Each structure stands twice: as structure tokens, then as C-alpha cells.
Image (cartoon, rainbow, N blue to C red; front, side, top):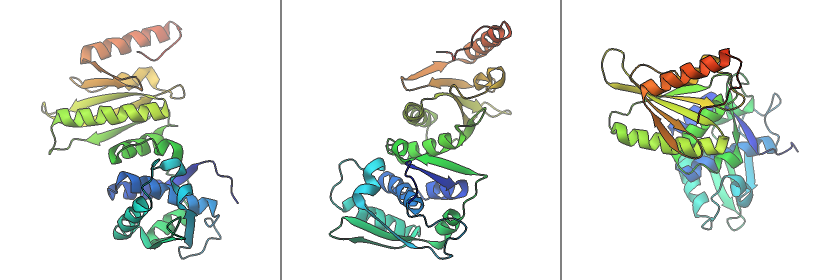
Length: 266
């Protein structure tokens, strides 16, 4: 049996599709644990069957890392089973042995992603880290940040939701980012950037920093003019104005040119 390191490699196209399905938080976390069981069962790879195999696991094992920590009998698994069948992620599922074991079969489209995986574009999900995400939105941010974590200059964008106020979106994003920053031990800089042709909020840009990143010229502090910028880490959120961000970046570049030791700004 393969060694269980608590991590599962998910092809990025599959991860994106799963997130778009908008499953409940508990079901979403259990789904990643179920995908992990495919590796533990050693059914994937070049010699894998063309049709998705039946897979089973003890309910306690499936939720050991991802939760829920205080399960309410089999209710969570009944709910997950219904959601995943409706979403056509599973084609069959059942609770066995007085609701202590869960058996399922993934849909062919899911199996096609997992059977022989695309190593050129994937996210490595740590189930213990995933279990600390307390909402769909936090899971989504975690998945995106985890994918980019090893990049030299990790960053991504979030579109503005025209149906929600900017204040509500900012609060939601900074609060969820703080939780993920704590999980991954990163510092994030969030910029609310405006359109170039008009003073209209256009997007959020999120940039990650940690000891392994290699940002050139401290570009994690570079955003469009008139952007609102927040620094977010496990401790809290700090607001910058545009001028102070530009000055901070300029000061850091001078120190770097002088050969002084670089530390992330606090």
C-alpha cells in the first residue's frame, strides 16, 4: 500500500470544476479526502482500469483530517452522498455496516482526471490544512494559494462581484485570507485596483510572500495607482494608502541596493 502522507495531487482542471460546483463546506472537504483514498487504494496510474472502480473507506478515516471533528452520526455522510450524486461527481454511493463505512464510485469524468494525472498543472492539497478551512470561500482561497505557493512571485486575481458592496467583498476577502495566511504561514498583500479608464473598482489582486518567494524589486508592493492595499497575515489586517506603499517599496529597494539584509515589512 502506498505511504499515506496526507496529501493528494489534484489536476487543476478538476479542482476548478469541483470549486465551481459550490458544494457545502463539509462535503467539499470530504470529497478531497475521498479522492485521496484513490491513491491509498493504489488504483490510479498507467495500468488503471478504464472504468471507475468502487472505492470504500471507514467514515472515521475519511473525516480524520478534514472533519467534521464532532460528527453527528451518519448525517454528514448522508448529506455528502446526496450532494455528490446530485452534482454527478459520484454515480453510486452507500453507507454500510451500520453507517460506519462509506462506499462510492466516481463519475467517469472525475475518474478520467484522476486515473492518469496531468503533472504539468495541478494543486497538491494537504488534508490537514484543508480541514482548517471553515467555509467554501476559504477552501477556494486555500486551493488557489496552495497551487501558487511554490512560485517565485505567486499572485492571482479575484473579480469584483457587482451584486455585493465593495466593503462587504473586502471584508470577506481579508477575513478569509487571514485564515489561509495562518494555515500556510504566508503574508499576503491585497490590492483593490481600479479600471484604467475610470475610477471604478475592477479587481482584487492578491500577492503572497514567504521565505521561499523571489519577488524582483519587491514587486509584491506594486499595484496600480490609487489602489487600496491591505497587508494580511496570521495576526491581522493592516491598511496602506498608495503613497505609503510606494515609499515602502522604494525604501526597501534602496536597502537592497546597499546590501542590507531584507526583511518583509511589518
